[in-house]
Length: 445
Image (cartoon, one colour):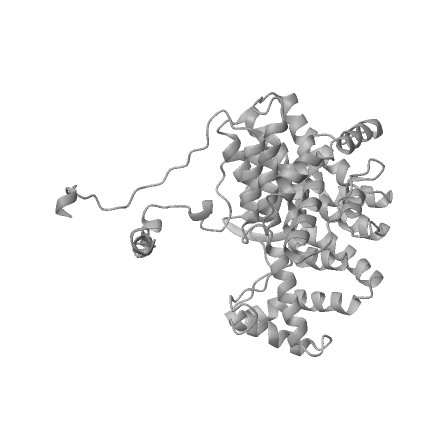
């Protein structure tokens, strides 16, 4: 092993590509255009994201807009909040089937999910409790792959089979998250192993809170707030990394379980699914080092230190501010901020909420002082979601799995769309820029 490890440095030497070559060959790194927008690689009916307008070749910031199947996310959320009911099942139905359900359709959909929540005791023992890793995302990917074995027609790509597989995975994901979390606490932290069976008399979110809490107890505002969070995360266009992964893998004709496991692997990456944890960790740091949370001068001074790579993780990033698509505002953050304020008052954490609000307002000023130019920097959904999850007393290790719990709906919808319309395996091009060499016999090397 020591001899082979001496060769590892060769990887960095031989995999290094001269940066200027990317411009020479007009390579769209990260599938991004020069203006930061995504390269158009597909069409979708599922969701739409708008963050700016192009007018006379200039990018004009606008208030962000998100649509599920043509419906504004604001209108959808206002609809179920006005009725004082939860919306996750309704919006997931919309994203999967392309229409808003009537009362009977919504009940049939929710009943199907309720009937598919459970995993067998053998599955829990053999897959979750026996092979417990320290990372829930890793466990979720493995659990999804293991469900292939329990499917009588795992490779059937008919629409009806894809939909039943999708409903089964959407229903089981909250259970897999809760059971995986319990297994990790039991194996690595010496906590009691508490395993409850899902309840059919509870909504998707209420059932999850029941499974997660040691006492099984939760309040209505807690469940309703989590339901809102999940509703806002169901889908976000086809170009985000994990959804694009779903399209790429689906285009090969592989099975649903392999596809969703790949999407989970993508979301596990800290540049994609871990932003709300980074925000929460950063805010812990701010709260420790800013003595007076009401002193905006102190707050701004500390933000400048972060931007100058003198504080927190020395990355120069203020996490949760700014977005790859949205410019002026993220519509999900606008909605979630209102709920975060309500929850903060309920949890007696309003001073902390005001600190978040101050950072949102002061970051553009701090950025201009450090960088020397003005830039619109609005909060993205992760800025407030981490605070909300913390107020709900949800452990940080499940923040990204919660993302999976919601986004699996979008993944399944995009997979069905790709299977029906893709027709060709997704295969972008890479240009070889290596030097060509003459072969030498082994004895001469």
